[in-house]
Image 1 (cartoon, rainbow, N blue to C red):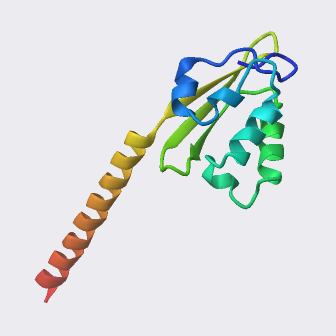
Image 2 (image 1 turned 60 degrees about the vertical axis):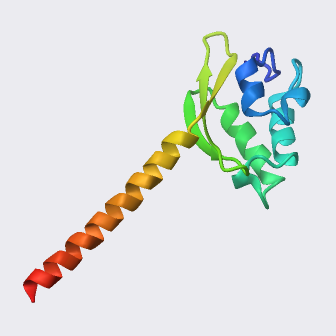
Image 3 (image 1 turned 90 degrees about the horizontal axis):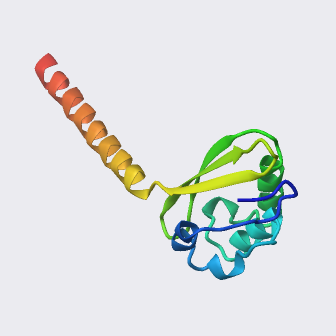
Length: 130
C-alpha cells in the first residue's frame, strides 16, 4: 500500500513470498519509484531487460494516473504475476500481486493441444478429400 505521496506504507508477507530477493529492500517510507528501480536493478522483471532506464519511468507514470488498472508481468524465473492497482478515495494506492504461473502454464498446454487437434483435423480432411 502506498500513501497519497507515493511512499510505501506497508508490505505484507505474500509480497515477500513472491519477491524474496526484494523483500529486504522494500521497506515502509520507500517511494514507488524506488521500489520499481529495485525490482529492475535486481532483474526479476523480464520486460525491463534492456530498458532499465525507461521501464521505471513508464511504471511510475502509470502508477500516478488516478485510475485502477491491471497488468501482467513475466519474471526471469518463469513466473507470471498479475499486478492490480486500486486507487482508494483518499488518494492512496493499493497494489495486489497474484501469481498466475499455473494458469499461464495451463493456458499454454491448452493452446498446444488445440493446435495439435486442429492440425490432425486438417490432415484428416485432406485425406478424406483425396
